[in-house]
Every structure is written in C-alpha cells, then in structure tokens.
Length: 65
Image (cartoon, rainbow, N blue to C red; front, side, top):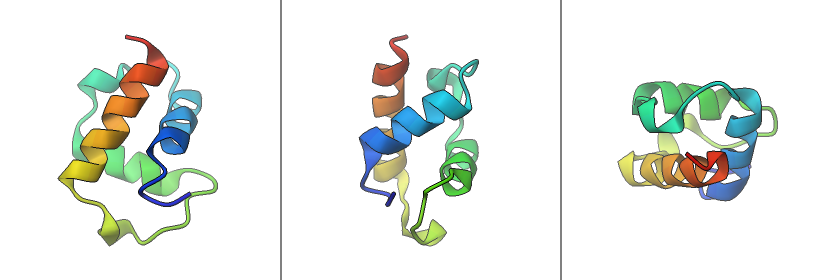
C-alpha cells in the first residue's frame, strides 16, 4: 500500500484497531499506525495533512460511525 491507497489503508486500520473511534484519532497517531500497517510500503515523509484527512474520512466511512 502507498499513501494514496486511502480505502485500503482505512480497511486495514479498522481491522487493526477495531475498538478505536476514527473521529478521535490525532494525525500524529494516525501517521504512526499507517506506517506500521502490514503491507504498507511507502516513505513515511510522503504524507501530509490532506492525505491523513482523506485516510481518516475513509476510515470513518468504513467504521460507519
């Protein structure tokens, strides 16, 4: 996965952190969790606020909160 694979990342995050409300996740934690995902293969410094917002939005939709 790369940073622009927002839907795949959101699915992986919801599986890795099922008890977390994605609306409450800080971007610093979100960044760490994405980089730690199995199958994530992109440079950690290639993310930005816009990408993290897109990932968080997709995760919220996936979690159906």
